[in-house]
Image (cartoon, rainbow, N blue to C red):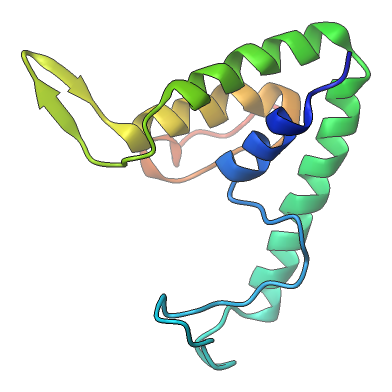
Length: 128
């Protein structure tokens, strides 16, 4: 059984990859940013590469039931996260949304081939 449409949507959301290749960058106030403020051609190329890699990875994952199951488990953890990126410190428990998301992406990297570098993992080189 392949990934569900909902799981595919979660992968796109988690990796911040839009389905469309027509991307508009805005200031958040309803106006598009001009060409000078938008990403360079290189950045757009990289964005397309990530989209292509994610789409290819979904095909590969769908071909193996064990991968589908494991990716489903990881994505269920993402679904369980509250989408509020605020840090939470309460009763000795510390939750860091960005760290949790980074760890989920790390767990998925084996299946997607998308290695996120930067942050705390920026000094590590993937072995694949």
